[in-house]
Length: 214
Image (tube, rainbow, N blue to C red; front, top):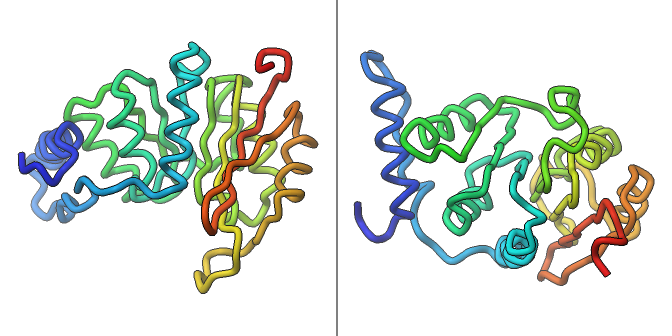
């Protein structure tokens, strides 16, 4: 495999694609470009740094990534944490199908599911140590429902990133302030929140319990 790709993931995708679509007359196009190695976005870098600490402390053994999309966060996550149990949830079938190829091809710690965070009854309370929602909340009409579901599913933390300035993306239907996010997550049952500075984005960690993080 060429060096410009995240080797483990790209090789797994190729294997899984072959397995998933063997005998299919018109399979979907392979999407190798998603696995090209590139510098992590600033918000992704910040979140990965936070996770390094909580994984080392034993506070993150399982993670639910909501709205994994094209893998902008998910693929660096799998690259840096090859043993972390990761469930990836997305509402778009073609996104889940691509990730299913990666899982089938040998990345056994990745569990892709077609799911909407607003329909959180799929999982029991505290099913995951950490829930991540990067560049997701601004797309969801019922943000309060999504927040309540994410908080219910998380045992320790919910990590969120959203744009901090207006943009021209027609799919962005909300613009949040720090106060908006803090009030929503505290109302949903979190004990405290912490914000991290990233240009043009808000990155927030919501803590389920204060006493464990003095």
